[in-house]
Length: 67
Image (cartoon, rainbow, N blue to C red; front, side, top):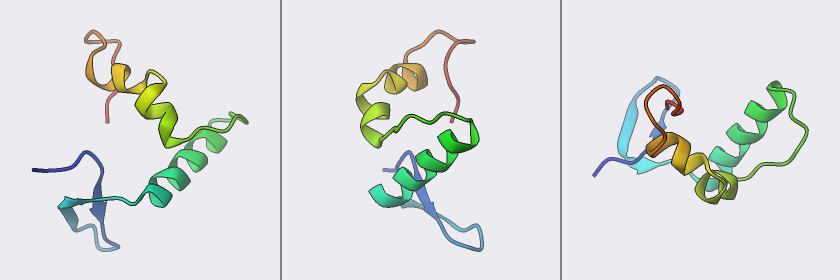
């Protein structure tokens, strides 16, 4: 089985069977929201339980978020 957020090394090699660690994903979330100008704290919990799962997986075409 492949994971949703696979590890990618410095040379761009994708390890489709190995997922990013929680700390790596959390840092990416923090950087993304800081660059978007949002000063609120978001965590991986926000994505699992805060509606992001719906937006990625179940929202109608044209309204869903792409990976």
